[in-house]
Image 1 (cartoon, rainbow, N blue to C red):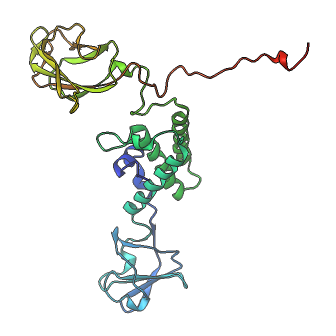
Image 2: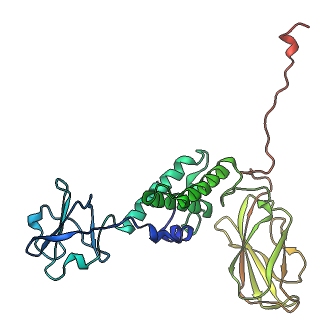
Length: 319
């Protein structure tokens, strides 16, 4: 299964993430022999850190701990050994635990698996992936909430913060499973009117509205300004798909922008507008308009249907 989020996504969902690093301080260091120190009753130590530095793999026995920054944990006596011929570990920040980056990677994977197990099996997982290589925002937020919950709960089982994170996650799971929340790949009732995205826009004229319904099946239309200027001067062209590729067929060529609804493609029109009458478009300003056909199946319609059957019960009961 894929991991739906990155560390950046997790940080965006839960900015206080770093406060929940699970490393714990190790105290009570005394000399064991020479420059080898020992801390008794340390608790399980799977990784040792000095001033935030990961000391790497443990030695095989305490007798092997004879070079600076080597260490060993003896589970039979619950003691951790550390070698340093320069500094007393009591004067250093000694910590035990899992590397935080490694911990986050594991928790993000676990959260992704959890989300996948809770979402309805009819939701196509392969379509969660967007064309830019990231996953749908709602999937990333949901997974981030679950991952943050795992981290916080692991450090403080009674945390109200963890409960709030999980409550929001449960809400998103319910909305996705019931169809009340829409993912990017899902076709909605108004998808035939187009979704306008800015690709590269430097001017102050923008596409502010569409009108009509797309009569094809699917396309990503390219609208580009060919001549800069104000309304009445600026010109635009439109590229639609052909048999070879998207945005490959010139369907509207150097049309003057007049501020009214103007031709786009497939039965759709667009309208340009700026914040002022003097607003201008810049040459090579570009938009993408993603459209689905008017008669394509809707994934999460606002109006749902249920099959009902009328039956004459008089055939079963005599009156």
